[in-house]
Image 1 (cartoon, one colour):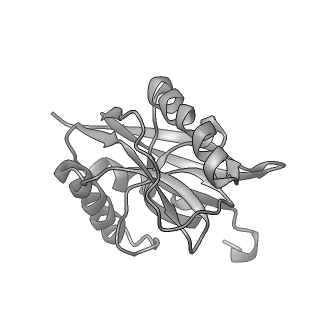
Image 2 (cartoon, one colour; image 1 turned 45 degrees about the vertical axis):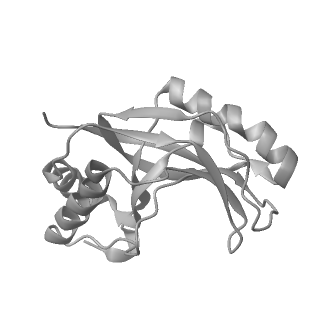
Length: 180
């Protein structure tokens, strides 16, 4: 195969909210934007990344899905009740106060399966979050508490990032269900 003609896809695994969770998270955005400025993320792009892969050759998609199916996990609840600011990249995000054991186990199982199948991915300490605003400006003052969003996680998704006129759009390629 001619490597120069190989097609790549920009991919990541994520918790992909259903409409109720997506609407609840989007409802946080106006008051946060009023305080911090910036640009709101489109509701259809809200998600919680598990593992970012980056450019993956198309011919490896089947192996990637096989690896994801090997990452066994149990359902869990992701509770998001606070917004935070990361000054280094100017984003406002929702995050859980504590990471559920099953959530951490899912990330670990996914990373192990990806290594087993020789996939490269962004390896850094995992910080569960949902980006709500980009290009925001804030300080170290805590952001006000918001109504909790309780998200029952029963699956995760393989997602492709595609450039568009508004930054990026995401396409869910496949979903993987919890066991048990």
